[in-house]
Length: 453
Image: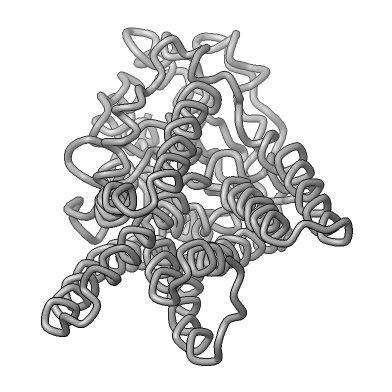
């Protein structure tokens, strides 16, 4: 049933939308002007690390993520004939950790979710009042959805990855990821569907089936947890339906109704806090960006530099060792200096080399070879959750540390996915998020022993 929204309903929705925007806006410039989020550059046509196109893509993602909150509010309100249901669904989605995280990026998942739910909302409205004229906005919404998927989402995602990898995350693994990242939304959604089944079993079955089918499709197609974002509104709707059912049961019981509202309000503090903490972390300077700033301030523009951190966060020759890897170690050829915005560095990149060139004896030989060619300054980023390569060990043990940049906070925070692998961090929570997004401990070192030779 479709109902026009009253003025009171709209005014109650406004602070929820403001919260959604704030949680997605803080830290929106994370990593810029460098694309530290894998896939962003591929998903935004014309994006350059030092341009504003990437910022525009993130802003559009923010707006569409917030628009999804509005769509779910309207759909829940009409579907369950309850203003409270709409507000509950909107509040849960606005503070969702996953939704807020992907709303920070120019990846296509937030846009895809918005387009999908726009189609669902227009279809629901058309089914309520079928007409030829009503088909027009529905068809437009479907075309927009196809365009977004083809031209925005698909360039950033390798579909079939879950199957091709041979070890895709199981459905149970994804559900576990949801419980760790969005426990309030997940539990409320499941409990809400169970309550809704007692009053409106057909609606409850449809919501459960939609989530199950979407979950399996996400696991076996994209193989990344970001694919869960378009499914989050299903959980929000389930929670809203359960709340509407419970409200009707508690009608006239003021004490119990007040208690239920109080418990729901307290429960929302958790996702609000975790999403807010995530946004605050993204607003901090990445350790790799700090290393870059140090080099800009202290290093001469013609400095022979070795970079072993990814993504690269100094103005360097992006080609690095791509056409030299086969010759190293023992026959390293130097690339000509690269000019980036007035800064010129002779730079060698190590982070993309095959593992057999940086581990074992080859790692030590590569370090000696670089030093012999006059590359005495190294930028090393070591991830505590991964074993250091022999090249890194040689560089760190054989050099003087000019400066070191470490995260200024601990790793005890809510959980998060690793964008690079598409897998979910287990313990400690948020470990991958902190390391991938805010940088591993990064050092600028100088081969002092070699300089005196």
